[in-house]
Length: 193
Image 1 (cartoon, one colour):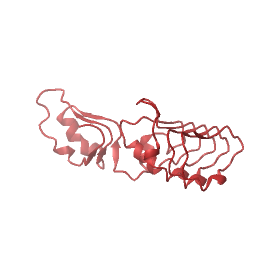
Image 2: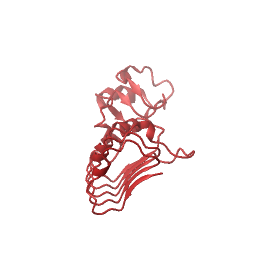
Image 3: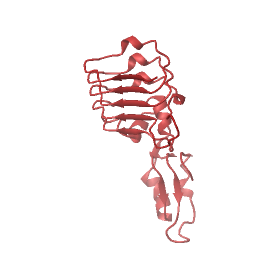
Image 4: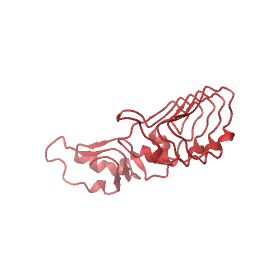
């Protein structure tokens, strides 16, 4: 069954769960107006489902979930369009870069919902800046359609080594692309090539 803490306007902390290491089902923290952090859950390693953190006005960090294993996040049933996590509408939430969240953000095919939080936790790029991953300067797919676009890459993205999405080379004018030397700094592509 799910572990849900929802609709508690005066709840400030979760101190009584400091020894919790595992729970079944989804993990939900929704509409807890005064909840500041999830630090008392730092021993939690496993749950079995989706994570929902929604509309917690005072929540500033989810760092308390730092020991959750990536394998805990999954969608029941057979739907690739359902989110494995949803972190939405938490007005003060600026720290979301737990190891499991960072790992999920590096999986192009995994669906999640992430928006309407404070700066630092609004989108994949903001969170990955704190994940310690390779410099993912291009979180979405990139298309090179000319030799000029390839040659401009090192100047436009001087520190870019990691394209999280798909890299596509598809010239507009036949015969325009002659070499790919300017892409030599790319060491990792998360999607297709």
